[in-house]
Image (cartoon, rainbow, N blue to C red; front, side):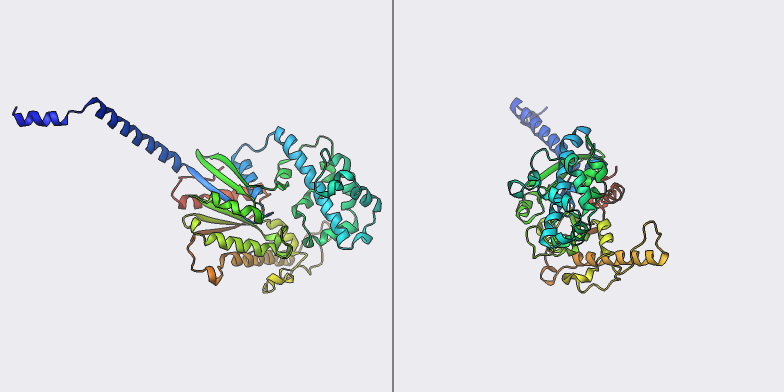
Length: 400
């Protein structure tokens, strides 16, 4: 061995500190690889939309379909009191509207009306909130009598002129069951229950061994400034808009049509640079209520939608109870629903000229949904796997 060979061997010999440093570097690389794989198995979903659109209902469906649902303890301690409050608050809004709209003369059960509106637990403290312990066991019979009253029904028919949750009609229709002592809310009751989102609510679900982080944020105007904190590296945005609200106004601004507001917000988000690498999933929600409303009110009766030229089924004679609609009638209703949903879908998807050239997402997927219907929600949420795959983040996603 030459002296040169000996020098080469000496040059490659590592000291103990060097060896430890290299081993530490390799360990860091291995951990980075693990962290990368974990990160690739995570999906970040953002639920956006105007207030009352049904975002939180979509989240509840995800918990039912992919999570553990709601325990008996949660139903008893959390959702039962909320259900009570939802029903009582809805009837309170209708009674106040009956007075404001000059419909009190049409109320036939004056005793029930005075008993409900004179209840200090409901109308006390300035009428801003319900007193603790107000129960449907106590006021349910009065609410039932009021719901059957022609004057209250007249106020309900004009519900687009004031603030009330339309889907709560299901509660009134089932009031006999809801007011039973120790009634335990059903899954459907929970889905209908209004629970206003304040701030940002994060829910984590494990779906096919992939971690989904779902962020639900308040939809009212004063809550939207908080959305910015959720925008980083979003896999997909689920934007929820209520079809049935085409004739309603905002809670916070009685001059602004809810559907116009939803369309404006959607255009802001779809053209935002924050979402240029995200899939935008549009849920045109509350399709069941939309179909019911079309049979009572034409879309083009609302000034904002005067350009709608689809069929008007609001003039059809109402069916007699138990009557089966004729094929022609059913075909007309189906066409009106299809034309109406396509009309509003186009309003969402067509950007105004000022935003047409903005940098934003190019992937928009639209679904007509009924978030309170688990079967409908399951099929649509499973279908949303495609949007996740398009981001090349996961091999599978929304399968139950």
